[in-house]
Length: 254
Image (cartoon, rainbow, N blue to C red; front, top):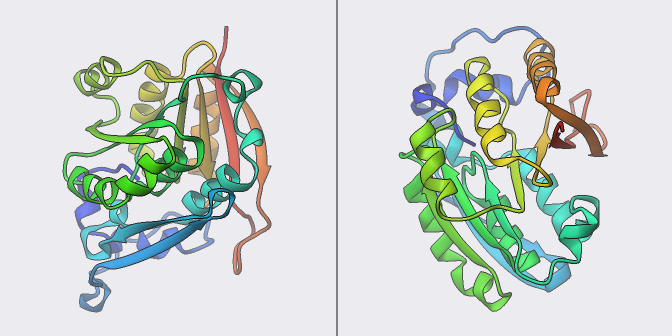
């Protein structure tokens, strides 16, 4: 979950990320009790009977926490990958090359590497990269035993040099992301970055939980200028929410 510098003060958006309000949030004072110590979460990947472990560091900010969209995307990759992968990707004889934007803790990308035997590049802000690297190394044996590989790179949305550095390492078959739409000022940089990597047959598969009506509408309106947007899957509404996680595929218009 890539973000701006205000990610260092996590309480600003925490209440609204867990809230079903359509109104803009009011900034809250930091709660000294909200800084939780490190938490390790295990995730059983049923289709390959393997377990991955992800470290959260909630006191560090939003990018260091697990969010519902990531878990939903992992479940689909585990139990129904054909829903997310085009026929050409399903029949590909060489390992898939996958780029994850705003990786946060790295759960989605690490799971994809294990489940699909894919070469996955995790990306996020510079301050998030060390925890991403930690989680990648923590699960390296599981991933490699499944034929996958995980690397980590810095990628600030909208930064042309960062994008060029990532592009120079791989030509990606698929771009993925989860819970990447939240700060309005990051919508344009996010879409600019997606345009760099999601070209031709390479699509952007995004899991998203709608939280802010106007902000979400702005993202999809702008996305539809250059992409065909399809809904691939919808989860039932989460407890105390009006909606559940939805998974979208964005494909560049010809």
